[in-house]
Each structure stands twice: as structure tokens, then as C-alpha cells.
Image (spheres, rainbow, N blue to C red):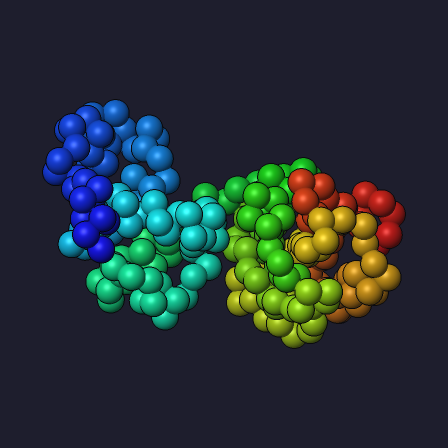
Length: 231
């Protein structure tokens, strides 16, 4: 512990232009590294670690901010130096980012499978389990909401039409796009993928809600079942 204290450098000991808050004020938030932004949210460190050092340890453990966002409140509280105040601040900041990304007022237009890929690839390509997600659209193809419907095992996920269309009715969606990932990284559709797609298309036809496509996300690759003529 003494060695740690010997090498410990507090943020106040750093030059002003290297301190996260001052750096943001001088150069703007886009010029800060992930750990520096995280340190600002944490606010303070511990006796042994500065907020910046604590932030860097979190980034090292979780590999990226993307993985950190999936940590539960309980998991964050298990981290040394993270108490209730810091954990709650982190979860609140992450939730603000999520809501802004899905703000229905933005009405992001979805016109092609490429648009879907650009929206979800950098998140879904790293999932180690299958996530089945639905993108709900208005009559002009604008994004209403994107919602995870189920998280399955390593090889499959279970999807029920009731769960898919419940939010569609609530949001008055005109159409929707199905999305799920293959943890293997290979987006080639399975027979089960095709059958689930056709079953949901039939359910949508009965309800007057069009299922436009089913996009499968792999590792930096994707497959549109519609483009392949599979649905």
C-alpha cells in the first residue's frame, strides 16, 4: 500500500491543462479520453487513487465504456473506490446517453439495411449472447424506439410475437425491423432465424404492422434476410 501511495498523483498535482475538468473547459469535451470523461462523472477518487486513476482502472477492467454501461449497480458497488454516490452518478450518466440516443423526437430515418447496421453494429457485434432487438418506425420510416425483446443463451434466443408487438401497439408504430446478433461473428441466418422471421411477419400482417426486414449482426458483418430473398 505504501508503494501505491508513493506513486499516486492526485489530479490537483497535475498541470492545469491536463486536469479533466480544466481540459474540457479549455479544449472541449471531444478532446477528452474516455477515462477523463469518466473521471469528471466520478468527481473524486480515494485516498489511494485519483478520480482519473480510478476511471482508468474501470476502463481497463471493462475494456470499454460500452461494456461498462452493462454493469449493474450492484457490480459497480463491488468495485474498490466506488460507493453509492459514484455508482448512481455513473448509471445516471449512462441512462442519459441512452435516452438521448433513442430520443423519439429526433426521428432518425431508417431507409436501408445499411442504416440499421450503422445504428447497432458497434454495440451488438461484441455481445456474447444473442440479443433480439426491434426497431419501431412511424409511417415515414422515422425511428420511434429501439427495444431489446429478449436475451438468449450463447446459441439461441426465444422471441414471442406478443412481446414484439406490445410496444408497437403502444407506440402506434406503422412498421418494424427485427435485429439480432450472432455471437459467433458469422451473420449467416439459420433455419430458426428464417422461421421466426416468417412467424412474426404473419403476426404483423394480422395486426396491420409491417415487418420490413430482419437484420443479423455478426462481427463487422451483417445479413439482411429481405435482401437475400429469405423473407
